[in-house]
Image 1: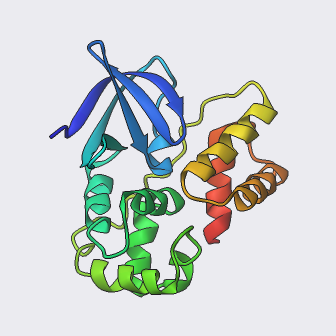
Image 2: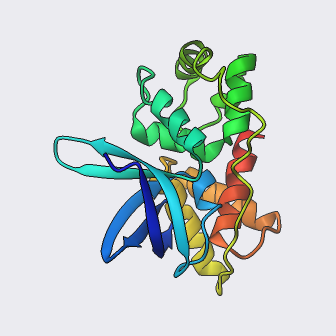
Length: 202
């Protein structure tokens, strides 16, 4: 089991990164909450990981905090919530906000996340309520760590691609990023994605 990686961040393109660990490159899918915390390419980075084993491949999922990893592990145990949806949930809402939603039974906020219908939201609340009781709701892992981008157009394209990878439909992804750009977000893919995801649940 690969539980943690420490090395050099070689590629950073949401929602996937590549870390060089002593000459071995590991491709890792990360939530946007974790993506915001990453340093610029070429810098040292350390992340917690969860190894997904499928019939046709092994895949690594990375997290900025061990709590986010534990939350992911609890989410994929919920009936109807696979790894991709779990990662999308953690990308669209912070750990703290998700915990509060579950504890307060806030179905409306959860259904604003892509792929989460009313029944899934209700199931999340029922099955996760006891499991999040030991988690720290004061932690907010979405503090941005933004990297300057040189071109607004490429930032928009990268932001749209990231939302598509998270499960949003093409038309919805384009509208969300356009709205974020019009709101005056900084000229970076990270800031556009963050603003778009915040708008989606507000």
